[in-house]
Length: 592
Image 1 (tube, rainbow, N blue to C red):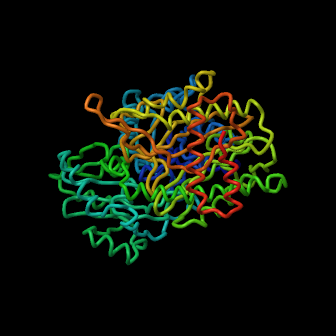
Image 2: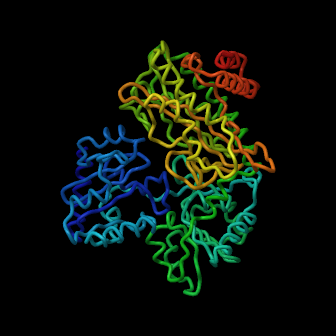
Image 3: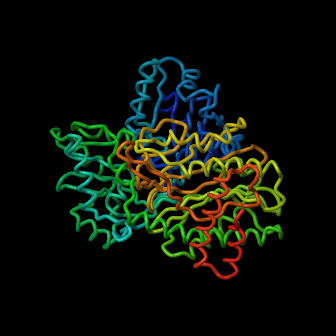
């Protein structure tokens, strides 16, 4: 915390030198990424907070950190004595960033940002706010470049080709579909900054961002003129040959602004205002068409090759989970394993499977009260030792060449209380109700969210995070355009979309409960009178903890659903297990 306070004062010194009164520091990078490489973790360096979502605001005498409900407990701990006040987003009575700035700044104050880190949509919103309230707005304040000592270098790992046999579509096919969308929007070209979009479009992957297999790059796409901007040291012979095959020119990463500045003023370039930075957008001298990226929708619907690959990845993932949870059960009594050990064991077991390329996010392994911290991440200092009692929540996932996984299971380590069983079963009932939903074409996630929450709402309880997020194919664990949550998202659920189903319940200081599977939207039936209907196929393969289920709370439909699911888990995983492992799984999936 002493170091964090020193960093804060270094920023304030930089602000005084150029007469800046307030600085807004996001936790993102020039590509608007959710997870960023160490090179761009300036907010982390400044505040000590390491969550994936959070924005710091600093004036010459005040400092705050805004984050959502997933990180309230984590941020409260990490910000202690840091000089930063935690502001809880979405909580009545807590000020927004704009309200806080109005409270703490005088007229004509200068509010500055690094425009490379703010989307043009967000920068425009802030500029309007400043103009309406008598503030001045600056987008060329780059303090990290000067005060961040020992800043990590930009990632230098080589990019690699994602085989078309695994991707299920060639680069030229994808380029054709994207350019059709560009033309349909009345544009001549498209500029792309999002790393996952570039990875999908060019069938490229990389190791530049932890947990997400992407390479740091930009792209410009036009008929007969496609370029990728990437450090050339990252371009292997294989990658160069692959890109040349499809007519994609390789340019240096740092040349992107110079390239954009030289575009013809008669050209119309399409870009996503939520995914391209203000600095890059403003460097274009031509007509700009701001619209949602068509790539988000295209990659959100998986093809048959990707779907089948994900099914196979789920089998390998399920086998790894059987071995990990069996190991926990067999070793917990000795008091020799902790939350960090579980993560290490999970990585070891997943690594035994074919096509494994790492975790899809940092495992959330929360024992007892740590489980109530929605995005808790154990380290050597905070890790709790496991004992044969209490609840353990494990949220983990793997990146495989043929699919991305994400699963949460909550288990008892012994002697579950009636309240623990009651709460677990409430969450499970919502999870089951959502997974068996059938719905007409055109339905959005917000229309189904109630199914997962109703059992909790009936007893005056709730969870504040979303119920479901999209999942990529050997790409981002969290992707759009679809979701299932209380907030409105106008994207309808369509066949080929993968979405998580993860209701939860968190009691601070006691325990957390979450149950998560990944679901695939598939066709159900079609009639002349009522049109098409869809349903979900459950992709994840691992049993629910039978010891935590209160059988008296389940309907007949719930029981049949659990038994059917457990039967499928047993049948699909058993061929890959030893006799001892198969017997263990048989006990975990016995009928209720």
